[in-house]
Every structure is written in structure tokens, then in C-alpha cells.
Length: 302
Image (tube, rainbow, N blue to C red; front, side, top):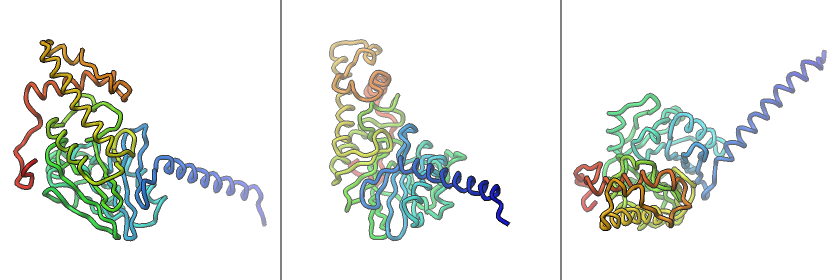
């Protein structure tokens, strides 16, 4: 016997569930940007982190897990785009705020890959939310090819963190850059764990790479080589302004409070972070570069 009340209740549950699923997919779509055929970024600008994933005929390569919450949303976004299995998760570097959340992708079948220097730090500094990589690589370069798509992994020596890797897709002329460049924003607060001299060198080496499109973990997700150059120029301009104050005889302790760079006054966090940026660069030039370590054999010339 047909029960209208039960049918209405069941229909209500079904359509409510369908609505929730559609809203969830709409939310994921809002944070997913198609950069090129099979190449997407994912990230919530309000939370400040962007990842990238590459869909091939033989599976998906994921770059940057961030943390479990981000990785879970990223996995859902990937599955809303493709039914291909997750083959690889690639780490950019060691820092906890980028390298956590990997278990989400391991559980989905991915092999987790990181530079050996990032792995060694991660092993020595465990965190509940961080899964140690399965596959390590050393040296300046590793290529991963999946389903006809190649991703180049470039280790450019000391600059920020440990094992920092810049990723390039040669056919598509796309690079993925973590932390080293944040478009149209000052350097992050007190500029932690950056070797400034080597950072500038690294940015010049990235500028020399053959690419048209850049994906960044912070700030606007998609940009170009101009953003890399602008970030380098800001560092160089701030150093020059500090040195100019030294030549004028300004008390070193007063320099961070008086230095100004009107060229960048429209960048995000200009008022809040300029003095902190100046303190960090001033101390680097006064005390010497930090962090520092001797070059490995595969870093000759860095």
C-alpha cells in the first residue's frame, strides 16, 4: 500500500542530500582553477594555501598536501574532476605548514615523494599530521613521467627550508613555486628560514627557466615570470634602501622604522610587514647569512 507520508519523508531526505552534495561540489569548483588541459590549482584564498594537480591518462600527480583538512578537500576536488587514481604526491619542502596531510593521499594509493634533505628534516621533526615520504631523491634534478606527461623536479640548493623543489612541466611551460615567490605581497613577516643571498640567486635561476605560467602556493594562485622578477626586485630594492641608510649614518636600530619603498606601497601587508622585512635583511647583512651549510657535491656552483 502506498504511504504518501513515508514517500514524502524519503523524498525530502534524498533531495536534501542531493542539495548538500551539489553545494559541496560547487564549493570545490569555486576553489579549483583550470590552468591548462589536465592541470588544475586548488586552494581557498581565505586560508592562504594553493596546491596543484595534474591529470594524465594513467593517473593523477598531486603537488603540496599542506595539511589533512586541505588534503581532504583537495582529494574531493580531484575526484570531482576525474576518476583517475592518485599515483604521486610530491612535496615542495620540509616545513610543517606545507608537508602535513600526506596520509590522505597515501590512503588513496599515492606514492609520496620528497627530496632527501626534506625527508631527513621531516624524520627528525615528526608531527602527528605528517606522513613520511615513501620515495626519496637527491641531487639537482629528477623527472617523473606519467601518462605521457613529464614533471621536472628542480632542487636549486639553499634558499628556503630544506629540499626546496621547484616543479616544471616542460611541454605546458608551467612551473609550481612554493614560498619562494608570493605575488604582490611583502615577504612573510620576519622572513623565517630564508638565506637571502641564495634566495636572490634562486629567483634568478627560476627566471632563466623556460615557462609562461607560474602557480604559487601563496597569494594569487596563477601568475607569470614577471611575478618572480618583481619578488626579486623587492628584495634587492629593500637591501639597497637599508644600505643607503647605513651610508647616511642612520643608527642601525632606527633603519627598519625609517626605510620606505613607495614603489611597493600597494602590495599586501606593506604597512604591517615592511619594518619586519627590513629587520630581517638588515640582520642578515650585519651578522652574516643564516641559515647556512656547506654545499653538497651535487651543488657545485650554487
